[in-house]
Amino acid sequence: MPWESSNRRKDPPGWSSIRKRVIEKALGQCEQNLSPLDLPQSSIRCGYPGTDVDHIINVAQGGTDSLENLQLLCTWH
Image (cartoon, helix red, strand yellow):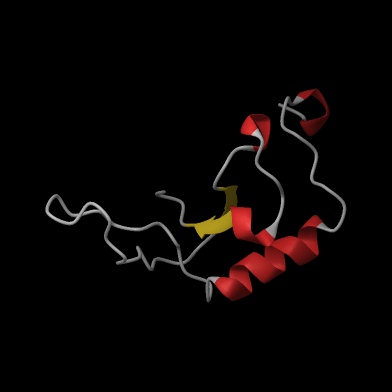
């Protein structure tokens, strides 16, 4: 499917530099917290190489493109 017909939101101005900052902040590793059954609020991160910059709170639900609302995830997460 060509991007022109996609419903995907277009990248905001400066996205490549924002993406680079998110990757640097995460040290290139997936930021998804792992939640063992006995530690639901675990601070252990996945740690696999990150590939995708993701919004913590979706833009459609009021989230922003701010660095605080972005995280780096691996292909699994």
